[in-house]
Image 1 (cartoon, helix red, strand yellow):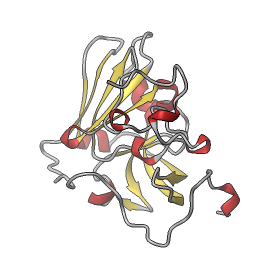
Image 2: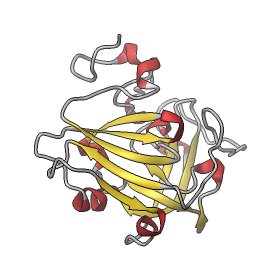
Image 3: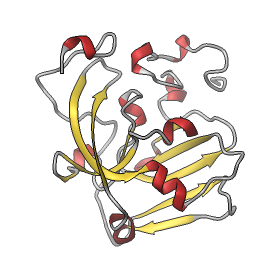
Length: 200
């Protein structure tokens, strides 16, 4: 990947170690599940055990990862379940406009439904041909290549459909609500009217 294809302010680092906030959770497959809830079409909750989710159709994708701290990892090979396929299995109500993606320890990130349904967004179980490492989000992480990396939630446990936008963990702490790396949407003070709910 050539430098001119990098988003503004980004660089390709030599050190490609995983970056995360807080401790790495322990995976207990017998206790693990993925839930989809909130503004669903049925008003009910959907749930997959680990064997059930791991058995869903898997796709391969290659995308760049852009961290808000200014590094970009080019051409990462991911495999997992298309977010759009999960939405087909657990349809939202017509009024749903956003999703909140929840992880272990209560971490969260919000996305517009259109962003969540983008063709390149996957719930990844594999990276570079093998299972995700614990540091990279094993057993399941979201990959949203067209947004800064904090939106690509590691250790995903639930997806909540929302009928109004709500800020997630870093969005409440001063990061931009949309997080487009090509527009350098890093911090909340850069937000234009209508790009996010009020900060309290």
